[in-house]
Image (cartoon, rainbow, N blue to C red; front, side):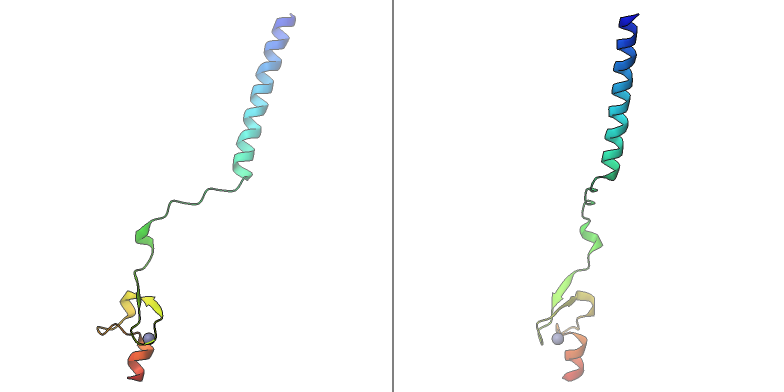
Amino acid sequence: MNLFRIVILGLLAWFIIRVLRSWSSDAGPRQPRPRNPQQYEMMGRCLGCGVFVPRDTLSDRGRCRSCEKKS
Ligand SMILES: [Zn+2]
């Protein structure tokens, strides 16, 4: 009967360790998501003021909107 108890205790300990590990992995810091380059907009530098803005907002001359208004 002793062997049976040891087996039960071993299974119990294994189960507890497994549950604790799953908890700790949930509570721990989550790994950052893999970066998707398409998630980010392409940035371009304004030739007028040197500010980086989304490339879509740059004019044909490579200037941001505020620089286009000034000129
Ligand atoms: Zn500008």
